[in-house]
Image 1: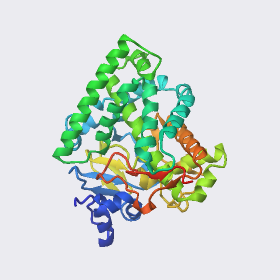
Image 2 (image 1 turned 180 degrees about the vertical axis):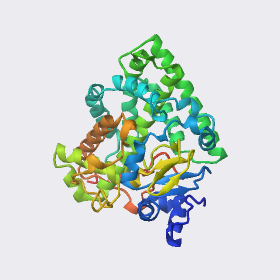
Image 3 (image 1 turned 135 degrees about the vertical axis):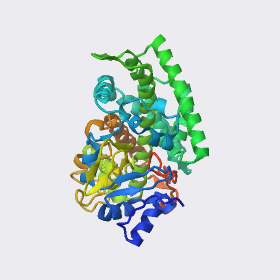
Image 4 (image 1 turned 90 degrees about the horizontal axis):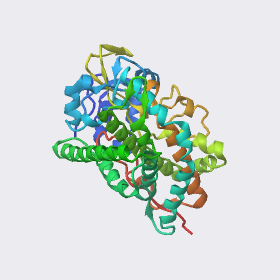
Length: 419
């Protein structure tokens, strides 16, 4: 087992808990470890599997501040040696986007994408999201066990983001398979090789798709991005490919796992499900609480310290990598009363949870994720009000790749209509 945390401040019991962070037990429920870290080492030096020393932030106030701190850069080209050690060479061509940049470049990219990926464009998808949801549920067997993750949770946001971007129907399955490889790949030579192949295939596909959009534009988002300009010009070819990549990847993986987490917890807590489905407002509030309680984005993407930074009396030396534990921050008892209890009537969930980040890198796709979650939950439970898990809750597996890109159930076996 790889020791994921290494520091002197923890007691032997807490250090053992932290060292278990690569175990299946931790992946199934990391929250007790994050709770101990918030108390004992809220800015925690780590030695993760990729071998690059990193600091993990777990308290809400520190996390919120760090997400907006310009001293913690998102431009990983400034920490290129660490980047190579973690991701290899293949990822660089796909990371020339607003997620991995600082102002003024980030400001320019965010402005161009924001002017095309508008709330109006998201709302225009509402009827299509509804239809896709109904079609997927219609195709599921009602009286036999079905794994909702591959049959519903993943296809829904994949089809929606492909509709948004303008990816042809017959090309979506392959794009999803390449994205799945990237999302679930761990560390080590074999994993790195799989990652390089999948990322290379995605990059080549997006280059070809963009070329086709230039020749035959449509009214989808990718064509709009190809044609978009601001006062500083258009996106470069590299920026276009990378922006399409991050929208495709983040736009369906995070929502897919979030939907799986939502269904798992609602199915294991019937009273919370009842409260969540009383009316539209109740469901909207429940969606925010689920984002807080079991976010699919366990940790924010890497940042690195452009200078020495002191957070809560801990020195983060210049050049060090920093990760923000979204899952840890979202269960901080200083902000959320009884944080380990899912309470769909919690009054401050939307205002305070960090599932979509904070500051200049706040997730541009948040309105779309909320729309998909709301429609998916209401439609499924209206159509199948008696849906139940097909196995004991403790037998539902969770993703076990050490430090995966996402946190979520690995399978979701249910019977939609037990009658």
